Length: 193
Image (cartoon, rainbow, N blue to C red; front, side, top):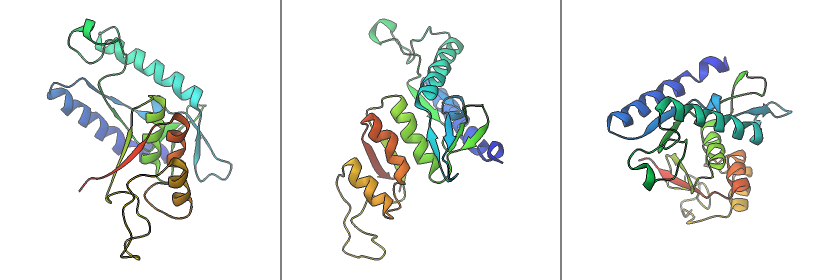
């Protein structure tokens, strides 16, 4: 079932990366199953990231991507002398929600898996920031549907965000914050409306 579930992500990522390339962007789709290695938690409700295996898999994918592009690892196009060599394309469209186990079996990241995969990939790439797009303006002091005077909090520490999520705030799942915390990458919440 996990093999079938991720195909919407695969098709969307490939289509979006293709569209970006037609606009002249250095974009490539990354099937997260080629880079994210996870093991199920003992209770089976989530997964833990195998960071060393994921980092090695991402490096292998990036090397293969550079060879496919024929750029010798100088992604981004333009004057190679003006840009540092990087096997990662300038725009990387990564599937969410899917990964693989150390044995290579396809799996999902379970509840809140797309946001979780965003923070994992952001951590693996040492991103400057991770943006989670959702249908709310950010993390509120309380549920605004129940507490009319709730306010959108301008900033939170990782620990505050984790505690709010752990105690029921639905914007960020507790596991979603862990990779960003581990790598020290800030998370921004943006409203896609």
